[in-house]
Length: 90
Image 1 (spheres, one colour):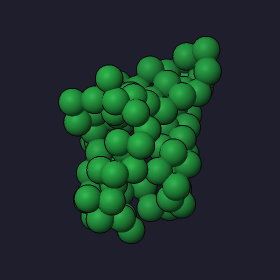
Image 2 (tube, helix red, strand yellow; image 1 turned 90 degrees about the vertical axis):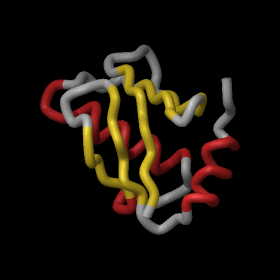
Image 3 (cartoon, rainbow, N blue to C red; image 1 turned 180 degrees about the vertical axis):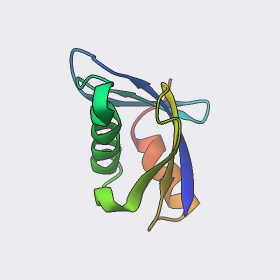
């Protein structure tokens, strides 16, 4: 199990994942924050970017804020770091 800090921009013009910088992954989603739509979109996009099934990700903190923490199962911390680095850095 690993954890990932994420900074989310809901209501963006396009969905995008990255860059990964200073230990935080930036994610932009077109979905609004109302009703948890943005949270579901974030989990789906991050799972796709990390090449993992969405069921391996769970939101553990930040449900109502832009800063979130995601638990990621099924990938070792060093492998997660390698995949995040592949998303690009600032």
